[in-house]
Image 1 (cartoon, rainbow, N blue to C red):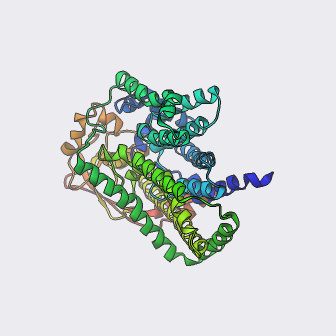
Image 2 (image 1 turned 30 degrees about the horizontal axis):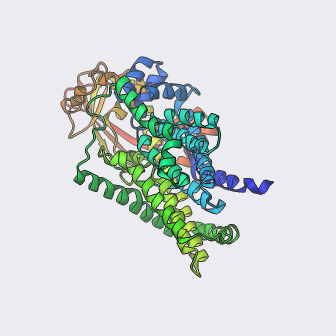
Image 3 (image 1 turned 60 degrees about the horizontal axis):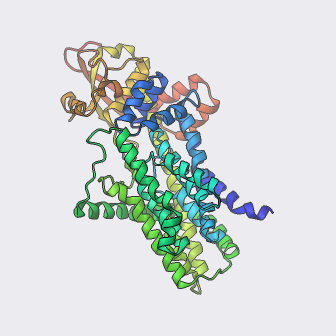
Length: 508
């Protein structure tokens, strides 16, 4: 009886090992500064306007609920994201079994879906709902593969809810293709699935009728040059560079790789029982994986929003892990027919898993260190209220921590958190308020959203220089969980070296 739960236990363990650092993170990044402030100030009107202009009013309610789960919306978000990562992986496994894949194959796809390195935004509050929508979508797929009218209604509801994330309307094509493969007859498929076929059309028509997103957001650009560049970008940034990163991390951690490989060899030899697959079935699986991959990247390619290898734009790679898992399984079917197939499979899977886990841990630690730096700056401003006489700061950041740059409103939000007042601007030397203000063309309330209401609070300007100090994510986490406030402030004071130099004529 217990044996049937082993795959679920293995998936939960691997996802937990990979993403456990997420539970210890407490940082705020990018547009999270906007969402966090709305929630903390209980400003639902501004929060709703933010999402409504993107044509996603439902997100306003979802984020409001998520943000209200605890006193710190960031912590509540991280816990929810961790739970969603586990649930979505288990759903992928269950769907794989419904597709008549073996336990071994379904596990590979499920684990790939949750540990693949292309997505680096699990710690970002405003991306949480994307993962929630994907989990609802996977729930809809699993329920739709069950028998019974009640299950069909539940599936339609889950799909409808998930379509709040527009990309899933295209990804839904993978589900329809799966149903077609199961029916094996086009006319019969259409007759039996007319409700599933009409659902995305009805949803899109209703959405376009009832919502009104701003003109600049997600414009379609179906030109062939754009499609070609976007597709190559996904293959390069979402696949090739991820592979190179995995090999780089493995080569730097050979002991960990050896340990995982020893376990991997044992599991492959034990779990893979040599289930025969016809060449036709394998080809169909690979073609299905390619089709799902196209469905995963198409919505982003068509609006020119491909991912980079690292940083905030990796959120556009949310859907590619599942089809990559399917393609891996199809490739392994071919490989396992060879004499040394099990050995090669063990090495490849162990390498991919080791590199992926280390890559995720590296990202989590690096971004936690960036938050320590940011928290140190907030603490510095708290300790120097006399700096309120300076309205504009020209930034000289000598402590980048991550490759991803800051948005100007992140700095302004940090000053606001320190003093509780918006209207202080921190910007790069090459920037100007006039250039930043151009965003007002699209955001009539941009000052409110981006913490610049009342700017400038004071006429003076100053140079703000940030240099590295002693930053240690492990020590920070230990003090945050078990230390005193005095120990935390001491750590934050030592994390950076900050110098403020007022311009001539300014007295502080």
